[in-house]
Image (cartoon, rainbow, N blue to C red; front, side):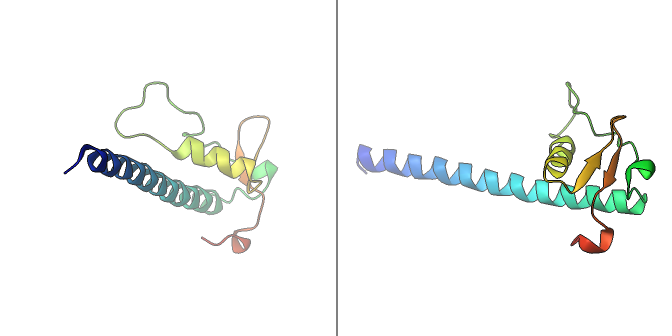
Length: 102
């Protein structure tokens, strides 16, 4: 096998690995986001006065075990205007549970 072919195969392998890792993380974020929406729905956090605190709203500086994607997913939901955040740091659903596709 020539050196050029080996280098090309290595580059294709690393690009494929990167794309696969991004797909896996994207699916994990989507799953975690659905769980967060379900939790807010079950806790009846449907507006500002009924907002609830979420223990995982802030990322830990010293994580234990696998990477916790819940703070990132929660931040994405707030930015996409699906979940609202009160000045006190509590969270609630901005859309009704029947509007969400859980």
